[in-house]
Image 1 (cartoon, helix red, strand yellow):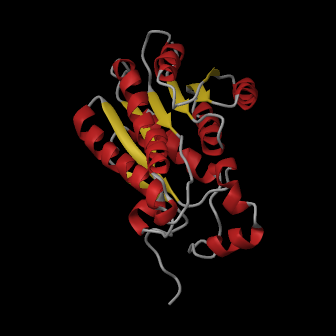
Image 2 (cartoon, one colour):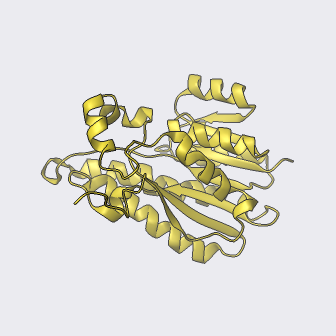
Length: 244
């Protein structure tokens, strides 16, 4: 059976771009997402399998893993699922925090737990790729809920990279604002998008295609000596200041 990468969030902007990048490396792909029409279109385009499901429903993880592995090995897992829930802390409810944590952090844990027996069967090492945000390290106003949830992802990355070595590598990508359907509320207003872009040393917002090649690399054997890393793909925003 071909080496297969299981991609959660396959109907989203970054997940779809990662799927294309993984296929370009010659690996098989199985997509998981909520939007059946978009999943089916992408699966037809790149020749991938897919499962329709919501990561807030526990049964999706076992079903997707079984479909992707067909009872055998998995070469990698990419959890490209997230939320952008930006509110001042005084307006955040307990349900806001719980929803963001459930989708971002608990969903990643459940996906990994379901896939773990199959990842351990991979030849060489298997690769797990998770997603954080530049807001964890930088601290932005109105990001309390999403930064808390994504901060948990960074802790999870380091813990599992240590626990699952040497058979399974675990790494995390921390993007800045990227033009995806999920971020449309911020990026569709061009004045707002330009103002945020200007905060980046590279003077633009990210595109899914800026992130996808690294995610595909981390999921496959070409990164077989990389684990436990939080890698910024953020136009320089996390580490550089070009003004004042």
